[in-house]
Length: 200
Image (cartoon, rainbow, N blue to C red; front, side, top):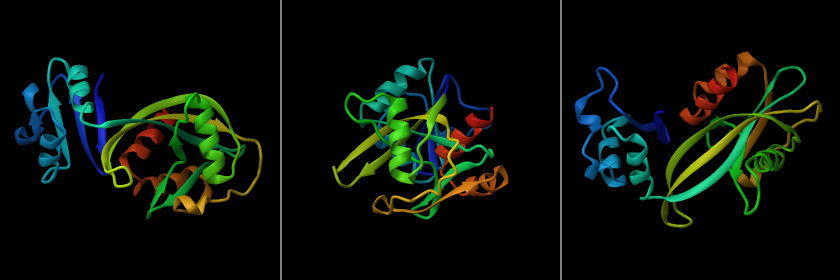
């Protein structure tokens, strides 16, 4: 199974072979070159990199070793009218999520973070997917690789959401499917991947 790591709007995929027509200069095949620095160098001029190897899982593990590992959880909350809960932060539409606390399950974390960031309490219905997101974190002065576990959650309440402004959340809205599609056009690729899983 192919693994994709997102660097904001750019990505690196780990697969047995590169897709047809993928530019050769953006393909890494040498196991010794599967490093964070090598990948970042290619991403300076490309939007995506493919690590093509007979052992994609081993290649991903090698790449991941260059990062501090972070676990998080979040989800898409659906109300009784079929609307999705979305929030606007740092100039983009997003979904609520956050770091898993020690001893906390992914499901409990997802519900807790959603309640903290939006004021909406919901119950987990099913798992959707997991995404990988790599970034430089200035507070700890380190590169982090975050795996976020995503869930579908439901609520019957008609409460108005409340944005957690101290986390940079500007507003939270209940969105019709058409509104969600519009908002997703400018969302990060990780968020769009979660939406695809929701609709499958």
